[in-house]
Structures are given as C-alpha cells and as structure tokens.
Image (tube, helix red, strand yellow):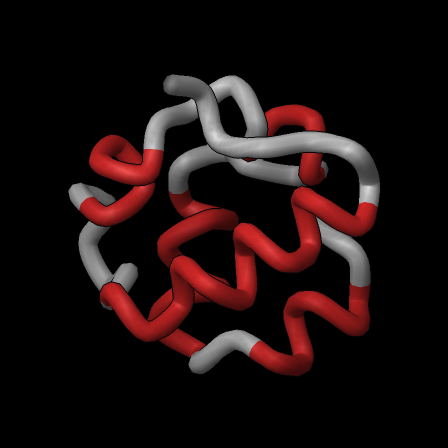
Length: 64
C-alpha cells in the first residue's frame, strides 16, 4: 500500500484507482506516465500535483 500520509491526502476515488491498478508503492507509481495514471478510472487531474510532490520527496518522478 502507498504511504499512509499520501493516501490520506488523496480523494477516495483516486486511492481506489491506484489500488485497483496494482500501484502499491511510489516506486511502482514512478514507472508510469502522468497520462497513464490519469487514464485510471477515478483518477482526476487534481490528484496529480499531490502524487508529484510525494514522488519528488522520494527522489522519484513520473516516467517521461
């Protein structure tokens, strides 16, 4: 499961979108493009900045 502090900042549909697509860590999330994440059912554009911030805190980023 993704870090609890990150999950608490995301809306429930966005959390479920990540979980339903097997994203259980920021490292796994960093293997995807923003476009791919936005294509998940329930993921909205307002969640992307929060995800970017969490990735950057760990020295990671979305795949280009």
